[in-house]
Image (cartoon, rainbow, N blue to C red; front, side, top):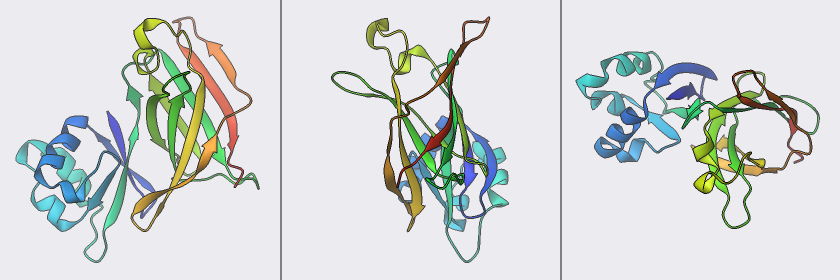
Length: 189
């Protein structure tokens, strides 16, 4: 499941299924990628009837004058045994709202993609995920997290940098869920 975010108006639209994204990429690929919907009236016009609920949700956000950039934020990726959360801030300690945070697990040979989240108005982000996202063959017990941060510029996400946090509060719940709270995550540039 993904959460759709209206980046023009800086607001949540609502949850969408990955299947909707896949269907729409086959219908109108020039207006949708795995990370952005370029929401226009043309996009709305070709949404199949089976996605009526999502279409109704999107209709409230379409603009007659401009493209509305809608980002897709993961809420869960292959399970919920793990959670990563934090607050993205700049060097002046101001929260960075509506930025894209891509979460990775550092590995010796090839780093594992864990998920992509969009920060909220307060710069907060959170993602649930399963062991399959980072543990090849079940060998790795815990992820070694780092982030790549992007912001919307000219209709595309531009790279702001990589963050390798130096601190993390780890909690294990009684249900054996691992919570990695990075607190304030600072972007140095």
